[in-house]
Length: 415
Image 1 (cartoon, rainbow, N blue to C red):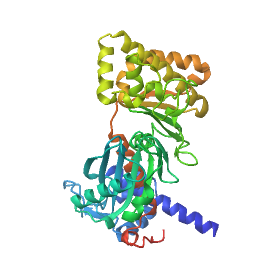
Image 2: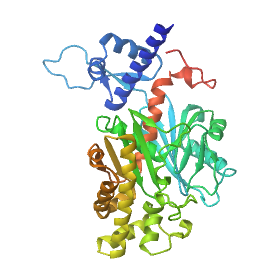
Image 3: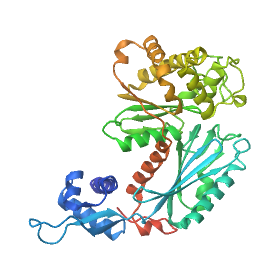
């Protein structure tokens, strides 16, 4: 039984490798699939034969130009069947629901932003709002819900992946917002939820697995402060899914007021509202909800720093030191090979960098400081969607076996 289980596992793994290769490289001949995947010709032939039977891939003749040296029939290329199944990827943020319809090739074929009122959204009202938004989106796209295999959601704040709840988020007025259960009940699809920074981490691993693999960390400096962790080649979210809440780790006991209601969180010194509060000389117990920050407020502060404004530059420098201390904790605990900084606030990194390295030096012994590389990446909201897509495609490659799996009973064909 053990040997059979091992063989089945290897077959599933090889099948996923072939599907991922086709998704990354587009139409590919069997012989080239063997070279890219390092699988034997017999294995590639057996796997692709099954995938053709399951209608997950299609065959087409190569359009390579004929030459005197090229004789015989054109090579047959294999490609993913984009219409085999669909996924809906959703990002939840303050006042916005961003939806994307994604085909089996991992391509976004339709997207839409729907607004809602974060100030009134709670556990009672928001699930219905989200269900209605998805239903309207699919109707506009002309896609039946029965064709949607997965719904993936990324949200700001503290996300419990195991319970399917958003425990706390600036996007909602209430706490413990149910997401997964209402969506599964409404659409009959598999549903998953994750923290938005985790999805940035997934996107980086998918886009450049050689650079972003093993153990690395991502810190997002934006409306809040988030972290994603990749440990030993796996996204790490902890026992309940709330791991790596970097922004809500305490920096100074009893310190500045955070949007979560606690005092002294790292976010209370690094987020957009914290930076605007400090630069304006407001008391550190000023309610974050009363501070006009956001993208415009942060952009204005960066503009002032660029023009030499002393208060703005002091604010970014002090924030940089806090960041350095925070990074020191991460490096000391998980020993990442690489740490990535991104988010809207990295536009001000030049004003934070010197103090960040000074804070890191003060907080961490030299031997540990030398073990990681730092990447500063311009912010791109597509990272979050890209991570949702990458995660969904990886699951589908392991669990979706074609038309049989798309039936309402959701029974899957054997591996």
